[in-house]
Every structure is written in structure tokens, then in C-alpha cells.
Image 1 (cartoon, rainbow over the protein chains, first blue to last red):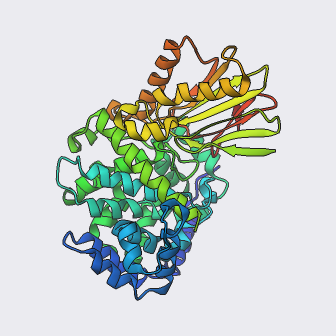
Image 2 (image 1 turned 45 degrees about the vertical axis):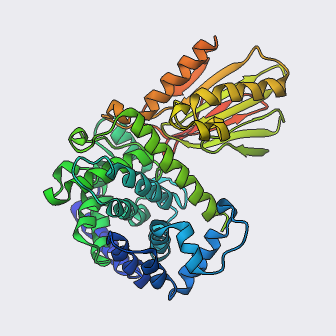
Image 3 (image 1 turned 90 degrees about the vertical axis):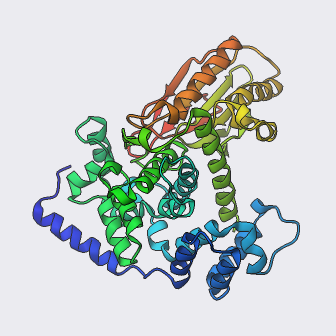
Amino acid sequence: MEKLNTIKVKVLKAQILRRIDALPLMSQSASKLMKTVADRDHSIHDIIEIVKYDPSLTVKILKLVNSSAYGLSKSITSVERAIPQLGDKLVFGLAMEECAAPVYRDPMEGYEGESGSLWKHSLLTALIARELAKVSVHKVSLEEAYTAGLMHDLGKGILSQYMKGSAPDLLAAVENDKMHDYREAELFYYGTDHCDVGCHIAKHWALPEALCAVIRWHHEPARSPVEYKSLVYVVHLGDIMAMIGGAATGADALMYGQDAGCDEFFSADEGWVDRAMNAALQEYQKIIAAMSNE
Amino acid sequence: MKALYIGIGEFGVTNSPDDVLKTMALGSCVGLIVLEPRSRTVGMAHIALSSSQINPSQAAKQPGRFADTAIPALLNLVAQRSKTRSGYIIKLAGGAQVASMKDTFNIGKRNILAIKKILWQMKLASVAEDLGGQISRTVTVEVNTGRVIIHSPGRPDWSI
């Protein structure tokens, strides 16, 4: 496979930008939930107030809470009772999954991943990032870590559509040590990478600067702006841990490295890591089972 | 052909010749495969973590999740189905990591070490394995042939 020449890179970037411009804007519910969840003083009542005016999100929440994975003896028919069962983070996750469906539900052919794999990977990254925020040496909001984990790989859902058939070549480039990681291979062959594409989606959705920094630098955390570095490291490691936890997006699984600076940013021992992975995997399995039973 | 899926922390056994046992996307988790060739019994566990000490109550409900509880549980199940406790063929796949991974976070390495140590203590050993590296593995075991096929996106399939 040959790398794209300068003209083809320009054409590709223009196509990607047009594709991003055509994405629906972030739904009002998702946007409000993102702000509310980020506010540490929010209450579950604030979440209910947003959701109850969104009929399609309400239906999704009620289907999920009444699925067999939650094992409730009586069915729940109101968001007031459903939301405390699911928790605010999952409700926000569902709102994101719904409004960003064209990205999260992409078949991921460019990565030879399965349909839904980007959503699953993002969810497990979010759950692990929330755990990692607890052992970050510098203070990181658990809520922000979760949100950032959910959104860090948005660019893959779009870039994948332009990379069909490329996985064996990009994989070989990394395995033969020609490229440092899969992101670098994307950049070499296509003149852009999933982090860069993700940044354009973040701008389209007017996401906060901290989230843009995570999306841009989660594979190169040492290069991130100092004010967001701890958050970026949390998602960098959460991303890797989600891949080793079995939720990857396809051929790029595990084709990234752990940044040498992680030691400075986390205070954790092996026992804590195993317990955190176990807790995150348990919650992840429950959510995925509930969503597949919807 | 019927596929029996083994999820994270689950284990299962079959001796129906048309079945395949399948476990998806092993990262640091390890797939432990036990074959009893005379009765053509095949068992598989999807082991997530090395020690049940991190959550004993969970291990009681879901022994397949941890190496120290999964191995005896799977061997017992294979023994019940095959009516024998000897002549097993053991294969292992998984235990992956990423580049430059620090030991603290290297769950795959801990899983491999724990599984090999427990097997050794039980006077058992694997005859074939595909462990470690930066590879996500989906493992399929054909009951009829005993073939263990490994699939990883972007690569041709291989078997052990």
C-alpha cells in the first residue's frame, strides 16, 4: 500500500470535514447532561429534569432498566424511578450513544472491527478512566474522566470509513517497527489520524477544551497542554486498559504503547489495578448485557 | 455447527461433535482449553484475573473469572463430562499487553504466570500456547477435530 500524495491527502481531509459537517449536532439532552454531570454538585433530580423532556431517550432508558440484566422484580415505567437505578453517568452515556450514533455505530470496516466495537471500547475506557482518576497523583474529576473516556476515540468512527482494506498494511507497518504505533501508521498513509479527525468532531460539537485535548493527545500524553495533562494521562491509560480488557476497536487493538511518564501520574499497586479492572469489567458486562437485551 | 460462547469470566464444556466453543477478543485475559481426546470432550474458560483474593464472594458466584478458582472448576467439569481425570490436553491463548507496559498494569503477564503456576502445582502443563504479545485473540475450538483456531483482526487465522 502506498501513502497518499499531497493532493490526495487534501482531498481526503476535505471529504472528512464535509462528512463531519453533515453529522447531526449534539442533541440538547446530551449537551445539557454533559454540563450537568461535570458539575460535582448536581443531583439526580437535575438529570431527571433533562431526560423527561426527551421522549426517545426516555424510551431507551426504560427499555434498558427493564432488561433482564437489571433483574428487577417489577417493571419500571417512569424516568423518575429508572434514572436512580442506572446512575447519571450511564444516562449521559446513553444520550451520547444516541446522538452520536452515526459515529459509534459505524461498522468499523477500516479497522476490521465489529459494528458496535467503538461504543463498547469507549464505554469500558470511560469506566476504567473513572477508576484511574481515583489514583491520579494530581486531582482529576471522576465525572470528567468518564466523559473524556466516552469521547476519546470519536475520530475512529469517521476515519474508518476512508480506510477500508488498509488494516493488514497498517498493522504490518507497526509490527515491523516501521511505525511507532497505529496512530502514526494512519498519519503516514492517510496524512491524518483518528485523533486529528476526532478534534474536528469535537469542534463541530463545541466540546469543552479539556475534552478536545484528550481527543487530540490521548496517544501522546506528554505533549498535551499542562493544564489538562493529568486528565489526558487518565484517558491514555484507560484506553490501553480497555484494550487489554478485551474491548478494542479492531486491527489496531493493543497497537499502541504505554507512555513512560505514567509512573509520575498514578499511585497504584498491582492489587489495586486488578481490583479496578475487575470492577470496571463487571459494570461494563452488565451494561452491555442490558443493551443487547433491549 | 453450534457455537457455544464463553464470555468474560465464564467456562463451559461440551462433547457434541458438531459444537464449537468460542471466546471473543482475549486481551490480557487467558483462554484455558482442556481437551479429553478419548471422549472428545472440550472445555474452555475465559480467565480475566489471576487471583480470587481480590473478590472472594464474586469468585464463589463466578469461579471462571479468576485463575485460582477457574482451573479447578473447569477441570472438574471436564472430568464429570468425560468420566476421567487423566489424559487431558491443555492449551492456552491470550495474556496480551501493549508496548512498554509497566509491570503494575501488566495484567496479562500476571495471568499467564498464575495459570502456569497453578497447572504446575497440579502436575499439569500446556502442550500448546499462544501467549503474550500485542495481539487481541478470538479463540474457536472445534470439538470434532480438537483444533484451536485463533482469529485476530487484520491478520490471517492460525491454529495451535
